[in-house]
Length: 131
Ligand code: SF4
Ligand code: SF4
Image (cartoon, rainbow, N blue to C red; front, side, top):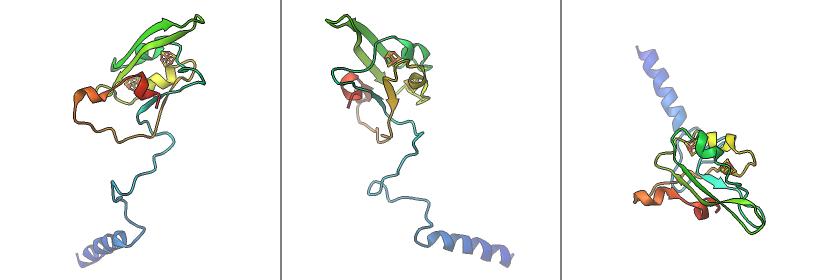
């Protein structure tokens, strides 16, 4: 019994040593997310506009049905999303929208601090998603 107690205590003491902690002093210290982390979405811009061609593939595959797209045509006859919105309160961060996009117009960033006070602040429109 004493042997197990000493073993447990040694593990606890080992984790108290500097450099062995698995917790971080958040929010002073931020985590570095893995490249595969799926955080807030980002609409990819080109030089003149967003890359999205409003093909409706991402709202079609989205299992949570939280993407709203309304397409329009610009003066050059190109389709673009007049409205592009994601309701983050419904999103399950599965990444299907990113996989479905044929022109790589949407990606998931490493932003994870998404807390807010009002429900409407969780609706990310085109302007917010292009940042
Ligand atoms: S990550 Fe998944 S749930 Fe969220 S918007 Fe994309 S497809 Fe929908
Ligand atoms: S799949 Fe890509 S191009 Fe199509 S509507 Fe979604 S973001 Fe735009």
